[in-house]
Amino acid sequence: MKVAFVTSEMFPFSKTGGLADIAYFLPKGLAKLNTDMTVFTPYYRTARIDFNLLSFLGKKTIRMGGIETDVNYFTYDFEGVKVIFVQNMHYFERDRLYGYNDDAERFTCFSYAVLEGLELLDHMPDLLHINDWQTGMIPYLYEKHYKGKFTYSKLRITMTIHNMEYQGNFDTYVARFFNHDFDYEYIHFDRVNFLKTGILKSDKINTVSPSYRNEILSLDYGFSLDGILNYRKNDLVGILNGIDDETFNPEKDKFIENYNFSNYKAGKLAAKKKVYDAFHLDKTYEKTLVIYIGRYANQKGLWMIQNSLEDLIHHSDAQFFFLGSGDPNYENFFKVMTEKYPGRVGNYIGFNERLAHELYAASDIFLMPSEFEPCGLGQMISMKYGSLPVVRETGGLKDTVLPYNQYTGEGTGFSFKNLSMIDFKDKVFEAIMLKKNNPKIWDSLVRQAMEKDYSMEKMAKAYLEFYKTIIGG
Ligand code: ADP
Image 1 (cartoon, rainbow, N blue to C red):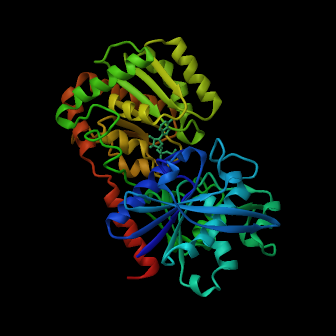
Image 2 (image 1 turned 180 degrees about the vertical axis):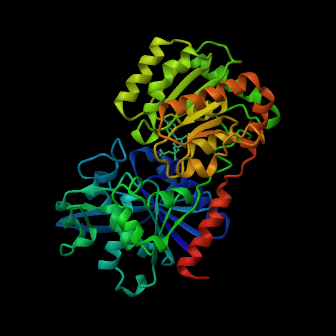
Image 3 (image 1 turned 30 degrees about the horizontal axis):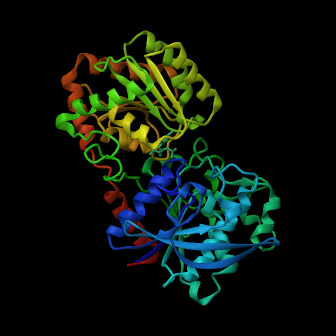
């Protein structure tokens, strides 16, 4: 089977969140299952690959709404996967990946570039696997401009939704880039909506966990697209994300002193020493370290952390660290807390891969009280590193974290149901107290968490089965 995976970000070349991780893990996992994998991704400034390692594949001229621009294609053989970088200096070589006024134009150009670029491959793929709103227009453009051509006629398209909140919602003015008469298919509430178009026009759709798949069919989680999702319900499935054992694994991680369950305390101590030194935290290593790593966005339920942090500081002896960036309200809050409680609280504003690995290794408790969570990788990574997550029971968090059951002793973390700061705070206290007063039970939970299998292999196998339902055999 030949699959072209299309993504607006891919680790280690570009990353703002979980999509980049999955765009690395999944093609790699599928390639190991003998799937012929090609990945199309923009060549951003962050890619920083030695240009000598790239081979020039070809060049195409993209025409969209009176604009004419050239894109170059460079291939890079990367861990069994053929990565094709789509290069256009004007659209992609910028400081950030998203958030520009011309995002609709940038990702329409990328979409055309992918469809055009398929002709440069040795064989037309059987399946195009697109991801999120940035690639949502591809099935529409395919239908209008490519499907009729003989070489393209058998192509099937499937779309993965990694987050319903980001939809690529633009003024109708951008419709001129589609080189076709005005059409209601891409309109949603008088705006052009890239995600809606992808949902409507792809052969199949999936989200990244079974629970989130069901949640988005409701008004509360559908972000106004629940109607269209219900319309496509029979073609919508949920496949749980997984993490790559070579990237996120305390036994192999190149950023930390490696450990496994048998010496996890020593591993955590070594990582704590490094972080506490660098960020001037009190060197009370035996105390609990509670962390948050992730985007500072409302989705993540940070208001619960914001409103409970001082209580947690006053009524426990735990230490805290926050790594992330985004909403300035939270960036400032964590900065102020660090200044107000020196030694107890630390923070780092920005994206820092190394520090993230060190913190997963150093920490005892990982916070993820998300309002909604398509899958969430942070909680899976933290479990693997023996840091027990405190999560809200939603989406992928519900599907991956087994809440501690005091009667059976089973559990890989802690969870609460309601969107309530009090419930969240109670759970965090429960976790801190359990670690302090019942080290045996804690050890058993750490062992269960570290042994859980949320592997890339499992995810890749599930996608392969899913692909077969689309293209047959
Ligand atoms: P989302 O995709 O909603 O941002 P996920 O939990 O699915 O959240 O994935 C987040 C990924 O990004 C994880 O690999 C996490 O470790 C990483 N990450 C998030 N913020 C940072 C940061 N500031 N520095 C380093 N890694 C980060």
